[in-house]
Length: 281
Image (cartoon, rainbow, N blue to C red):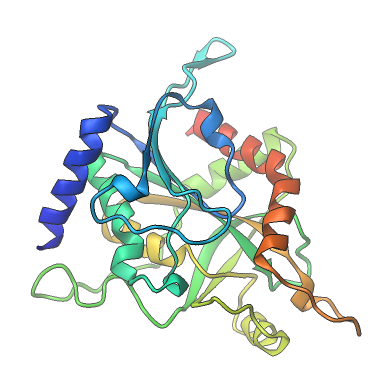
């Protein structure tokens, strides 16, 4: 079965559950849950029920697709938005192919989204970054060793320009929203790795030398597919660990559970920022 037939089957199933036509898609990364509580007329569809969707097997990734409406008004100003929200994503390190990882982006495009907001929990490379910092991704370095466009959709390979993949207007909007909510925000280059191992101190030093500011195991595949499908992209990260770059004699302690615990501490600011962006966008 080709991609078009798969997408049609998946789309038809989702539309049988909800008639909402989303204009904005959100991918909620590790620790970013909570936003869904304010969505109205929401329909939750477990990934397990959606044809050709993979299943996340990582803590902090619930595995639900939500369609619904953002609150209708705020201080007498209309701001209703139709949303398609992924509560949890799939990762390369889980054994899924790049095509499986990015399949939901194809589906959101088929449902009608024009803008995609991607979130994640990241580790710090830039020594000025602290745990809890919110970072707008302005560029990336792909060290995953793969790409969702390898092989192509058609007989002819298409060479994609990624020079402007992170939408500058959306980045400026996010900065304005952060200022309004009094949230300190930074900007940086995201380094994507395969995982599931965390980076060694030597690897972090190397990533810093090649221009990286933060590192993670996701986001870039979805960004590439979104650009291919002509979807505007805003990527927002929260720094959830800085241990590898800290100097000292003590043993470095890293765990996914600890990262999720850190993300819960900072969730208030993260949700305020995304809410403001959804209002202003």
